[in-house]
Length: 174
Image (tube, rainbow, N blue to C red):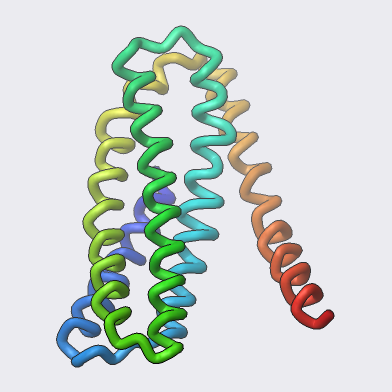
């Protein structure tokens, strides 16, 4: 849940930028879009959602979950998929804008606003409902092991990010 607080800070910045875009007659800062996309993809999705999907949800899937908890977990996975799709759409809209498509400005602002609206609801569902309820499925040793797995997951992220960067740069240079 600690990671949610940083995501919320970024959402506030994205909200300000979306409002600036709406009030500035279509002035887009492509570098900001790239930075926001990198944050959402790397931190919110790959790091945060990755730990949920690759560790927590897999561990929960081995437990005899109440139907309501199983249903919420499926909703969360679907919401992660929706967020990924919106980020891909944001990248596409930015690329269209850079090629001269002025209609893309509205798409960029709308997608940013969607993210700003979506994530607080998603975070609330996890923080107030799902995480506290599902923690009871684990004993202290299991929770400690999961926290250790989370730390290991985080330790690998920086290497994964920059290995992918180098692969893309090497491929581009060929």
